[in-house]
Image 1 (tube, rainbow, N blue to C red):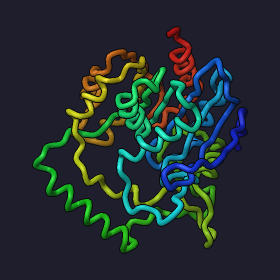
Image 2: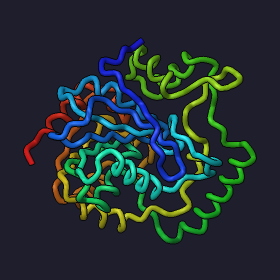
Image 3: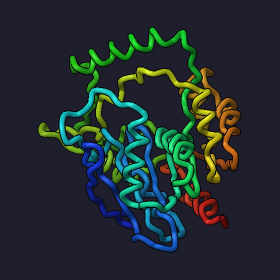
Length: 305
């Protein structure tokens, strides 16, 4: 099994009626801003371990489990659906806790990349450097889609409460590892075995459950507003690095409804933009090519201000 070269430590932070699980590497350093890593949908903070191990620089790194993922838990009843603005507010309070008034370096993958982009346009003064790892956003919507979207949202809530949306369980950690490798064929077995034990845990019946709330599967009731997103992108003042993988994840997911070319056009709204590609990698580039990604990140984060 993979052995972490830079073991992390964890703690729980009270944030908005949640006990937020936060993973850290390194120690606070007055001479450098913290590096904050935010994971994607149905992922966990431990997913960053392979990149952290490959990074050249020793620095203070902070990585939370988003609400409803990993070991982060609600103090009361869990919600039955999740709202994107909550991630922004959670991140804002976490940065208050760890960084105070200091600007941070922020890296987000997938859903976390979307959160990082929006947050950086809403709180531009809090970000020194921003790296977006395939935080593509969503296909553009039209107002005419709203009635059907609200109906879909209500129908999916009913299905959740009837117990029809439970996440699949696995007989063993090895079964979870097989699932991870099936989804991501480039993931080596040793890393899959290690990650399976971070991504899932045994329940009372002895089956292994993914550490993600099934309520995340409920569609967002609100439509994705591209005009709002682009206006927020224009407010980002930090240098931004957009990193994509050589595999075309958008083409695979959206079947022409949203393309990589459309994403590349959208992100041009960012005032200070650079781009990079991780070769021989899919969407989970931080698993596929952690050394190459770590080098790209190190070079960008170490650019002079």
